[in-house]
Image (cartoon, rainbow, N blue to C red; front, side, top):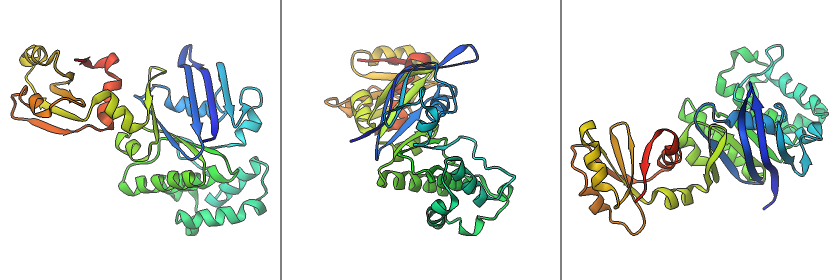
Length: 307
């Protein structure tokens, strides 16, 4: 599996503080890596640095073996970037935006005409090429940005905050990511939508306060860290100490607001965990990515203990 991007000890700074600290990363062709984390954790600034539009303070960043800090222009030619702000230049039609961008990469419209025409069909934009971009919805602009990100035939795509307002929006985003993977392009997605992330990710990285606190393949993260099932129930504030003392030494647990999660790991009995709970609101369910995400952030703002 070929490595298309490699970051070593990467440091990003801004406004007098460290935005990303000593970060390591490998992106592989044909796989989708998802970066999760709270607002301000460093997701978008990471993608901007990899796109060559935010300066690297320290460390090394290689795009297909090209050192981005030493040869930014050449490295940028191998990147496709879809920014968080789904904007096109309002001075030009949607189609002209695509051709102007191709010229910025030294590609003549003649050489991109067939690719653009094909992609317009794929994303159902054939009738919108001459539209005033202000008349396009956010999802329609994003689909034009899909095409723009491909005109230089990049080996990997940086995709910041996919539009996910409706299920149809998410379907377009999943389709784009799937096609990129089929074409052996690596994809790095930054999103806050955990359900969407779970549907697309081959590998997950969780950032918090500019540091990588958790990473791995989704299935292994779930099984290794939070187990197979969760007993979740509502408790009264005055009963917190009682239940925690009852659970300690038997199961890992997590308290979020007034809901207590008991993690049932491999080799443990979910029925015995259920018997520890007395509540009118009890739920036994399979673990999911949101549970892993909550677990990964416990050191900062959640109460957590292991058995």
